Image 1: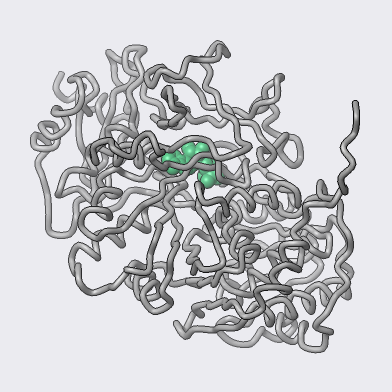
Image 2 (image 1 turned 90 degrees about the horizontal axis):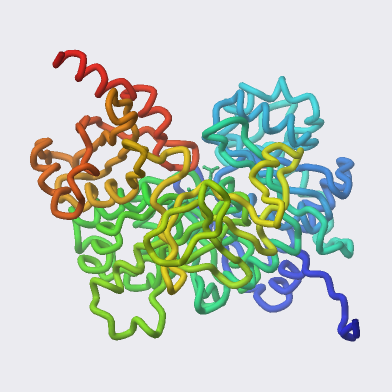
Length: 545
Ligand code: ADP
């Protein structure tokens, strides 16, 4: 091999940080605090405080590779941890504040966190599990809603005496930067250890025009929590690009988000479908109240974005949704739905339908789908199989070695998502493999049925799941939440679905509930629905003799 003669310059988060200091010192970071007031400072302030943080953690004895955990909402001090911890060579481990204390204890023990940084407003949660995590030597309290209690380290007091410059070490690009855990809806949560290199490459691609196009002129609002798959990498992209960043803090209700988008002239906002369903419902009630002309894209992912919602935002409010698919196991963006040049003259309905797919793979991510027998399937838009991915920001194993069966012997990661792939590479998720409905040996797509139900004018949300059936093994059952003041009968819902599906796909029954149970990352918690209603059809059959 003739080796190229170019510098072996490491791809590290430190470079993103230094670049932000050099060129974008005047960019702003705005955070909403628990009392709803807005805190704002510049990238110059952010850089200085990040140096102070690295200095303070060094003084506390943090060494390269040590895990520093955060239990925080989205705000500027969390951003300081996002950069200060990896840039000093340690590893930021983001804890999900929506998990049960027992899960948090398990995860923090598994990660062997040495330091834990927590929002003061989340101390009651911390107290429920911290005693069972012996590895934690210091708890540092961020005084978000008042000073740290006696006997606890206060983040601000810790930073105050430190110098505002720091000699960040030269790091290997393959060294670990962040540790994120899956939420573990089945089995224990598993750790994914991102490297500096994987974060940097993901950042570069996220800033491409044909993906999210994050740029210096943007104002980014990550509604997606910084504890959920690194807030989809947006904190890294924003700092790298020099964008203005707006953090919502703990205020995630539709009105607070909309007010913030207007006040700060947000251009790109990102979050899970639940958040946006609530926002759309509110905007439909008061269409003229919020002036969102600054918004160029609303990034929606983490669960399937219903086509009716994408269409509602576009047609009723002129807002463009960018639907994205990703996983904690991949840093996390994998595919993104954008119509391409060849679709320029396609009818609007077709372009909208493309926006509702999970999209095609972003650069450096490769996809394929395989049958149960492991056979690679054709990209015909019809054949369903499990999606597999590979690329420089796809996990090669879990931290701790669990779940080895998710990694194939020929170098792919098994996502657990059941999909079709069409000739142009667009991925359509029909289910998560654990949520698949198998009726008489045939698959029924719960996602397709849910999307159709959510297009009914009276329906706010719907989840379709497998219920036991004496004859067919499993049959689809639908849980439906109506919009306030609206309703529809079972017959009306069935008639609505019949327009788009063959008869044997239609749910055998509908249950009307006030809320769909959710996972800690906002996905429908179908295990809970199955626990509660799994016997529903069998019971009905028994009653009917
Ligand atoms: P968890 O810890 O809940 O697994 P992740 O966010 O890593 O959290 O979950 C990844 C999964 O979320 C994917 O495998 C897929 O099933 C689902 N998902 C993510 N984005 C989308 C999307 N746009 N459409 C449908 N499903 C999605």
